Amino acid sequence: MEVGNNLSSLRRRLVQVSGSWTMDDYNSLVTFYIRLLPKVMHVERCTIFLNEIGTGSLISMYGTGLEKNVIKAPLEGSIVGQVLASGKSVIENDLHTVAGYHLLADEQTGFDSRNTLCTPIKGVTGNEVIGVIQLLNRQEKECFDPNDQKDLEEIAGYLSISIESILLNKKILQIADEFETEVTRLELSSVRGGRFIAESPAMRAVLELVWVVRNTPVNVLIQGENGTGKELVARMIHDNGDRRDHPFVPVNCACLPEALVESEFFGHEKGAFTGANQSRKGRFEEAEGGSLFLDEIGEMALMVQPKFLRAIQEQEGSRLGSNVLIPYDVRLISATNRNLAEEVEKGSFRKDLFFRLFSVEIEIPPLRERREDILPLALSFLEDTNRRFKKKVAGFSPQLLALFEEYPWPGNVRQLLKEVERLVALTGDDFLMQVETCSRELRSFGAAGSTGETQTPKDEYSLPDQVMSLEKRLIFKALEETKDNKTQAAKLLQITRQGLLKKIKRYQLTF
Image (cartoon, rainbow, N blue to C red; front, side, top):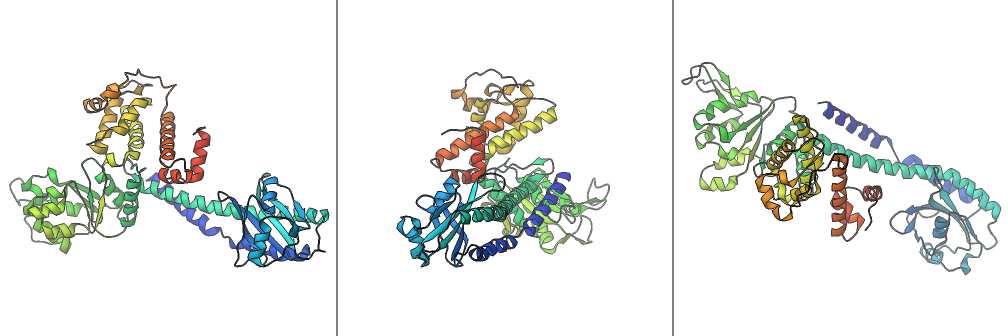
């Protein structure tokens, strides 16, 4: 609960940050400069350009008479681009005789530029040029001199504070938005007993759907192969919804003897049948106000389905041996690895119950279809298993990691967990787990690539090293797939382009 409370508190702070920052005050101050400078400097036009990183151009953020027109000056072939690159002011009093982008800008704006003074706007915290301020006249006699340059450079120093505040504000809002998205994912993926790993786009889509339905009073059907984590998704819906303070009651329909199904769900009174020595609540009563999770719903006995249907429709039922109706306030979350529509066609599942059981369907893909989750899951299981087994296994050998990525995992996440538990149990402290210690199924699958590598001490490979190795491999793979397009690669990796560049720099990657 402490993690959940901390995340909720952080979410509130992010909302406050996003709500408290406004661009209006900064914009008003900068536009004030635009109105004031022509009067102070005795010029006809003033324009502020900001460096639009990644586009190869400077964009006119504010300017005299530019309420509707936006000028994008190229970094090469323009005076403002020259000032940005050199960081030095430029005076040109015969502008009409000089070739350059300003001639095209004059055509766009209808302004006949004759004299110009351009001064760099430098960042407050360093010498980086963040923009350019340009003064223009169309009267030949209104020439600029070194005194004008000195005055404008002084003004640019004060202006840089406002400009940098605007850029910083934009960045803070962007980071806050990205951080809030990540906090939402962490908050949603935090479940009792662990964390739900969702690095792949497919599982992130599942998390988004869970977030949408968590507070909506609709029944949900979760479909997926055995071992994909259906109960974890059900718990996420419950733990993040408005019923979180009430019971989550799981029932495995496949494990209930047919003769006891009705008693299990609806309870019984004392003496209702042989062996009923005392009254007992049913699962519907136990889940009052909370969620009833029906695992393997496709295995529910046909004989009990009519009463079950009535309990859902009327939101009430009675215990065996009693005619007293008990109201139910329960949200149903069901799960199955079967195709219920096919079961309806076969006659082994009631059609009316099928349509009553769920309003929203969540499909969990098998592990082989979301390989981005395999290594993060394995690392998470290693950490958890080390703690439970009171061991200090160092990590996975590179060959074992490669095998994990290639293996199809027919038993899905559950099989991966058992494999990690086996490896931890058979590996000494401070050593890496090896292919040779895997189960027979994995050894057979990877036999052709086995190297017989010996165990490696912890000093050479640590858990952070494994994470770093994984990130490097994924970055190389994404860049290879996108032909070194870093923007597209960042999208594949589900991180920002800036985040990708930082990782490339941190790991000193070359391509």
